[in-house]
Length: 385
Image (cartoon, rainbow, N blue to C red; front, top):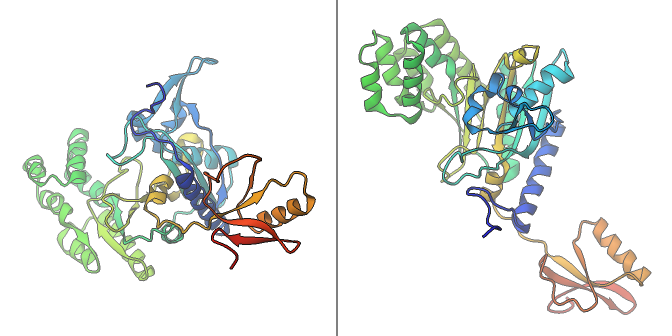
């Protein structure tokens, strides 16, 4: 069966494709009015460029091939964020704040989950050149606005900070292997294994690491963390940053999770994840990744977010179909052709029935364009209203 697609790869048929495209236009327009400029990086690049800096965690997720022109190894992008960082640092080379957005397909060697596609449509926004908390506020608010515009408003937005775990790991004297192992256990919240792995660590760092998986919640979580975690300067600073975010966004459904360490190896500050009711995984992810442009020639503060537009489109409430208008073939009737052009300019879908064509099987044609007393009028399929 040569026409079968690979596993976790799927076509987007007309209804789904139309929904994705409507969302793409609406969200890119939202980004545009907030000052985010659209960029379109290439689908493939030399591998060392794709995996530089923030892309180093993507090695196992990236398809690789040999360039027949240069003999060098190419990669099919698994994440557009490193590419956008390269554009900011290496091509635009602006000195002030730069806001960029993007939307296109990426490819993964393995699906992120059982329900995920290996060809997500990644849509996102990135803010470069500003290290202050105001940039984090801007992108989190933009994320919330984007999800509301898409029809999938966040039921909660989890806020974390990688500085908490990084400070504890350093203070506890963890070697690289133990740090990676404990990090993995925290990410999956494997408490029994975490107890075993931390058994020989000195206090108070052992107890603090064991407490991290339980430090999630709303209003008073940050004060609880301040009481129970060691008063290391990095932890104090991280908690204060999250406290400021909480105070500045009382209208958003913020929660806090100090064991949320996704992207730990390239994030270096606030991280966040947005969730939708009854959906098991986050529908949008983001965070701060300062210094990302260093390997591209210019170190820049950066923060941003991205989402899979395919996934968001599936979750979004289905729009009620406006339906199409079925019209006679207008090639030799200038009056009819003008009326059809007028309707199309108004945004109506008008399908001209070819000679001998049977009922419209494409767009749902629920109206006819008919001549009535010398005028071309729209008639419901069941008759004139």
